[in-house]
Image 1 (cartoon, rainbow, N blue to C red):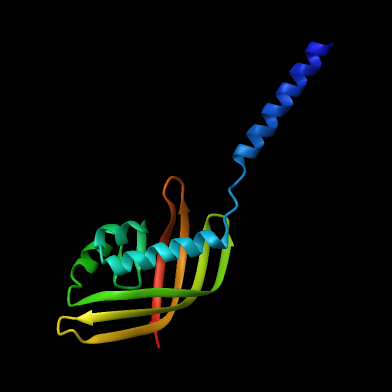
Image 2: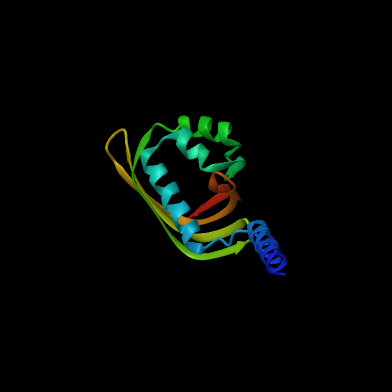
Length: 146
C-alpha cells in the first residue's frame, strides 16, 4: 500500500513538472526596457553588425531596410556623423505572449565631420518578438521626428 502511494505521488509530481515546463514564460515590461536600453547603447557604438543582430531575421528598420543583412548594409553606409548620445523614454508597453509593443520618445545627439552638433528628437514605436535562445528582438521599429 505504501509503495502504491509513493508511486502515485511520484507520478503526480512528474505530471506537475511537465505541465509547468509547458506553460509559456511570463514576460515583463522591465525586459522590454532592458532590451531598448541595450539597443540605445548599440546605436552609440555604431556597430552595424551588432545593431542588425538586435532585430529578428526578418526585422524592419522603418522603411529603410528589412532583414538583418540589409539592415547591416544600410547602417554601414552612414558614416557622415558620430552618435554621441542616444536615449529613450517609454510611454507605454503592451505585452501579449511572446510579442510586445513599446511606444515612447527618443533623443539622439550627433557630431558631423565638421564637428557641428545636431540633436534629433521624436517618437518611436517598436514591435518586439521573443526568440528562444536569443531574447527580445526588434520585429519593426519606426521613428517620427518632431
